[in-house]
Amino acid sequence: MGLFSRLYQLRLEQSILKDDKTLLPTSIVLILTESDLLDADFSRRLIEFIEWCQEYSINVLTIYISLIDVDPDISDKIYNKLQMKITETLKEVDATINLITIDGLDHHLKTAKSMDMHINVSLGYGGKKELTEAFKDIMSKIDSGELTPGEIDESVIEQNLLIKHEPDLVIRSGGKRLADFLIWQSVYSEMYFTDVSWMNFRKLDLLRAIRDFQKRQRRFGK
Image 1 (cartoon, rainbow, N blue to C red):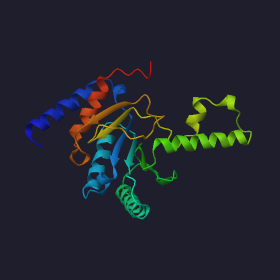
Image 2: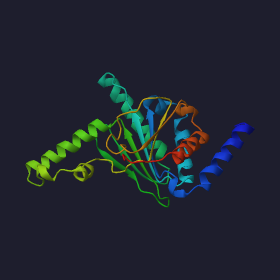
Image 3: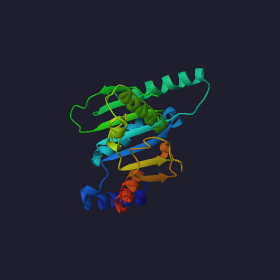
Image 4: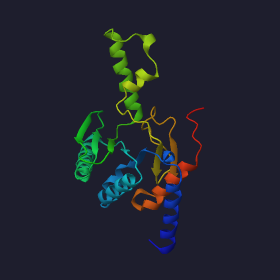
């Protein structure tokens, strides 16, 4: 990093920390692609990103890795490789970690020892699938008499979602389009798009996203 970039990063850090800490995001979503995960430098960069989040008291990090549709035989091989890589990358991270697989199963990988941080990783399990399964669960409860149609409200739907966290900030690196991830939970989240690809993403870029978040007036749909 050059002198100008270091000075700019220092200025951003000072600006972020001098503001009321309640303006800092505590839960963020990072949207990546499978090609990001397959990059040889992915593991180091992800560990760095987690450490940056810890520095700024971001205690819930949700990572969504979108997957392309290919031939099932090829897809299974790629998917198994991705699952092994993310599990191996996170094994030494001091955080409570859950891995959500494409079939909607929530695998608890580990519990934090000392850090108050929760990491969710979704491998291709998008919002459409999550909402579909939530509605199926609700219909099943109606069939069993546990619920009546008149009792269905927002809280009932939220109780049946797999991921309970509502992110403050969603970061999409290297692209302009959102994935369908967390359709329900991110309805009031702040969206931050950057042309910087994941492999070029620096601490400076995270600080820019945090500073941009601080400057916004959140309305929560009002």
